[in-house]
Length: 537
Image (cartoon, rainbow, N blue to C red):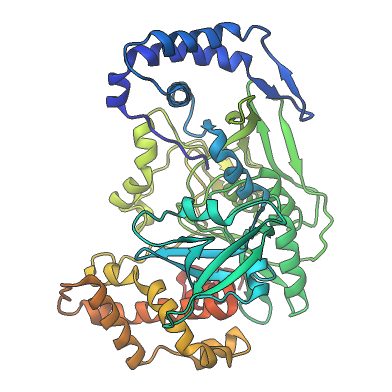
């Protein structure tokens, strides 16, 4: 999914004259920029860029107030793109690298996942095999210095920390660490390297025959990660697979089709794309499975979009498996990215994609405001808790391979609907306490590290390690201290207790078994996974 920034109308009012001129400027720029063609080389579409530069100079030299050239151009471009669709967007040069890194599946840096809590940088986990991991930086460590600068205070942002930790492979950065309750600063000089950005969060066996894979996005490395996960689980007896795409916003179309190729024994149409200037392009399976799988279930929700919906749509249309959860987001548009001559990029919608039965699942974007608010409206109208509240946005009937009726026009409807758990939504204490779980776990990890690492498998950890009454009382005291004047209403603590204990346990599991540990604990008693396993029977 593209990120779309809505322009500020008051700002447009204040600078209407330069904005009008910048619209003229952008039209010239869009004609004059060097857009990439199909083979990756640049071609010029206009040999007369002089008038564009002349217009900019005129604004800068004659306009009554000071103007910011980059800001002016970006605002104008965003206004033009707003007239197209919600997913065509402009990426400034300063953001392009980080945007591309997420899809490429790698970046250059020290290899630390971190979070900022109460103005302090905590190491969530060092990426396995990365530079920080090799030097002995641990989960729960606090980063207090980078080079000679003390890193603390409310001005810390994720972006500022990332800028300091990232750098070219082979370059060095000194990081100051505080461990546990010690005030001593341990300094590490880390040599940066290429760090993978994993898109498969977790992979493990749910039972003797069925595996589970959680995919957080579809990047350039997703297929390889998926196949490596399958290979490892095949040795454990893998026959069936549950693919969790909940909250997955999509990514590369081909990453989804490559995974689908491994789920079909025959040649099948998986998806096709078509646009005004783009002829129909069919994506088909090869029928060559490396790891034959019997039954398949795909988990989706309102956060599953784009490539996630391509995968779910193909499985559903061919009746290859069950789709479990809630209606997906509804993004059926295909973007191509064109790099511009100033280092920025234009991500432009060039086609629509259609599921094998011919469905377009793109929801309407005639009303841009309503499009952005649709997730909230689903909750408001009761769709997330009651299947009967789901509107059929396109009454055109499409048919699966076995003749079942399915619809397009607004996402993939699951075969088995599972409502969202709303039991804790109105619990004020729960929502307050939840935000302190990671920070509490990081502060306690060093005290429990020996006990935690005695468990050699996540299964042993799950059965033998529990959050005791003593540990939970410490958590309550921690939350109360951090919140100051916290009043806990009668009954709220009792209702929230088991859910909070589970979340605390999951974060401890993450410190020892990475993300797989976290999802293993959180997936215990998950109604969506239970339904997926039931569908396989």
